[in-house]
Length: 161
Image (cartoon, rainbow, N blue to C red; front, side, top):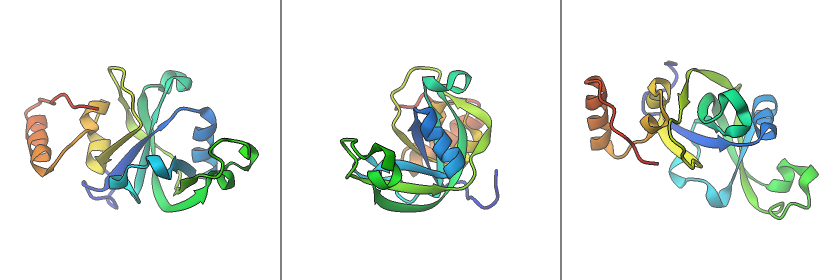
């Protein structure tokens, strides 16, 4: 694990379902989330990770990459994607999340069963240790302690998405 992040540092896992959006995150170092849909518990999360869908072929249905989130700012969608000026949501507010370099996780975090994922709020420790998406899910401090104890015993409880 990277020393600059504590084990309970908030990580927002977001879906990335277009090659173009992945290229923007990788090359232009930003990601967008509609303000209306952003999970309030994860606003200003210092880390974003990306769940990739079927368009990513061999990397599909998994979280393979993460990046530091340097800055969250509200802008109109048209400022982010001026070539889509006629888009129905062109004038809506979006978070532009400024990112550091995309980094590959030490191992993919796969979804072994189909899930409709939009966002998952998790921790840095879970992101670094999980092998399956269900292991990223968590609840209150007592559920966290129970989860850790079960994991230590080699038992991973089924989560809910």
